[in-house]
Amino acid sequence: MSKKHYFDPEDLKKFGNITDWQKSMGDKYFAWYSEVMKEGALTEREKSLIALAVAHAVQCPYCIDAYTATSFEKGADEAQMMEAVHVAAVIRAGSSLVFSTQMMNHAKDLTM
Amino acid sequence: MGIHQKSKSLVSRHSELSDTFYQLRVLNGQERTDADFPKFVDRIKAAGFHDGRLSPTRIDIFQLNVGKLCNQTCAHCHVDAGPDRKAENMTRETFELCLDVLARYDIPTVDITGGAPEMNPHFRWFVEECYKLGKHVIVRCNLTIIVAHKKYRDLPEFFAANGVEVVSSLPHYAALRTDSQRGDGVFDDSMEALKMLNAIGYGVTGTGLTLNLVYNPTGSFLPGNQASLESDFKSQLMRKQGVTFNNLFAITNMPISRFLDYLLETGQYENYMQSLIEAFNPGAVSSVMCRNTISVSYEGYLYDCDFNQMLDLKVAGPLTHIRDFDLQLLQNRDIVLNQHCYGCTAGAGSSCGGQVA
Image (cartoon, rainbow over all chains, first blue to last red; front, side, top):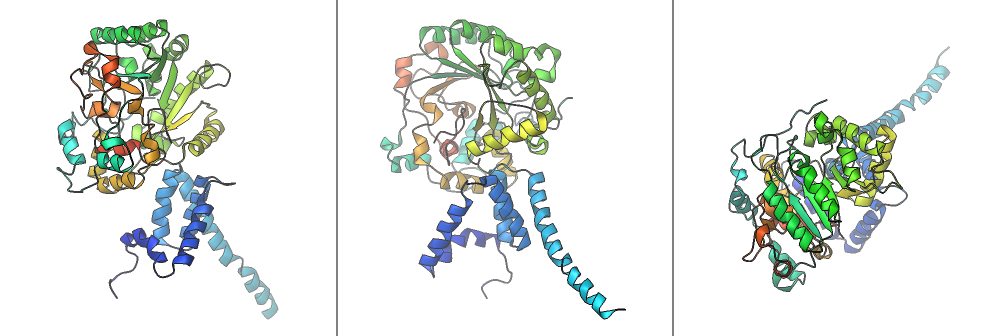
């Protein structure tokens, strides 16, 4: 192992290197990425906030750094960014809580 | 309401950065940092601009910086303006020299900035004289000055009577973003001023009274797409404040003066310069504002732009004062370039009128 810790912020700058060992797939990924993040039916600011929310849901520190900066660049403010994180968090929480319906069903089967 | 100042001027703090020569040494890797960034001149040379030289197209805009006195002390101010800068104010004599030039030459637009230019005692007289000359007058009004004292509350009517285009900084439609840069209370005062301007027709479609807002990033990042920001500003300001305006100009923060101080103090200088350099856009070079603007300081010296003025980089050539103004000579000058020029050529470019490419 070259490092004694995971998640070095400097590694984010090397993201482009993922094309090194698989160029055609890497190039396709970056072309897709760039197409997706362009202004379309959603604005760049809205897409950045979605990306920031997803970054929290998948708990990617690189993406959190990148999309905190990008969200500001695209004109978002702290309140919008925190609301986006709450959306991610509440859906994550809900995805656990909704399973409680199965727990309740099974509990009812097991009890008098 | 009143404003709680965010910062103090570099001058009042006796900061080394209040020395423009020191700022240039920082920008060229000789002080505070040894970062060796590619020279701007070499970069435009590589992009095909003859010998790294940039020349004017024609002078359409006569921009005056009438002084450093301001009721605000914004954290990013490239002028290092503030309430303590009382000494630096354009005199009546210098204004008269400017009027002589404006009367003599076909320069259609007069762009007045500061500081808060309205605090200069000769401001109203000068605007009226420009209007009589048939000039299009732009005033870079910080908004809060309108509500700072009762003597300024009639500014909206004064602007309207003289056909003034009002251009006002509002870095964000969220109070926290705006106040973090411009001082606590600035957002609320700005909204009050915007409502006063709207009430007499400024920023309202069909009135002919133009109110443009200026967005600039409130941190060490570059501005996003101007049209997209404008659309967000319009919908959010209308939804939350009932405020309307004409256009939004997105401006990049130049790495000079108090913004340079912020970058150095927070350890972000190298990263910011790197992001400007990586975003260098050759397509923006031909439309930079120094090509159609001449900038005059409160002392009457001539500069290629307000940023060169703040670095005391006077126009090239023997005649550098308004009393010696020679349009022919000025139109044939080379524009003085330095490392801060990366700020105007990053991404979609930046000028006092917003993005250029």
